[in-house]
Image (cartoon, rainbow, N blue to C red; front, side, top):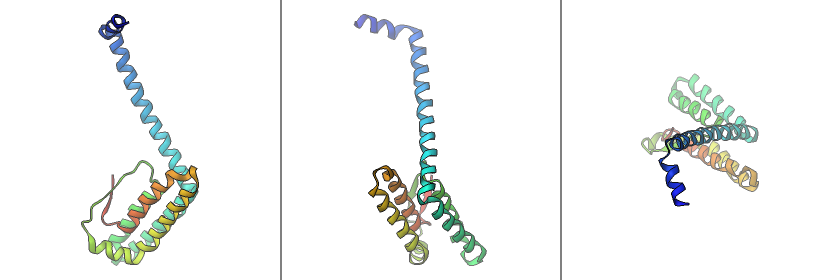
Length: 152
């Protein structure tokens, strides 16, 4: 038995087979991630993500039209993109603008963050929607601290 395994390892054809198998597995892994991301984003849009992203885009456009809120409007559009397609995106929070985040949390962030937390809690009630709760919490973090949250 050991001799047969040793011969297989020395055989160059088996090395090519192993390389092809690894490449096939990585392509399959990539394809599955892509399929899950597309399915997750579609599921997300059906169960609340589409409406919340429209709110973010409308708020962003309203703030951009008022020249005073230009920076806030741009951040709203960026968070709206995250809310529209949260699966497959990562957020990194670095608290480098505490004053802007505090002003945001006191004005628009608290209601939008509360909606996201309620969405996360309601997603936990249904076992099939449990993956959505992680995305709702990601959106809640971006809703409360948009100036310190960066998308990857």
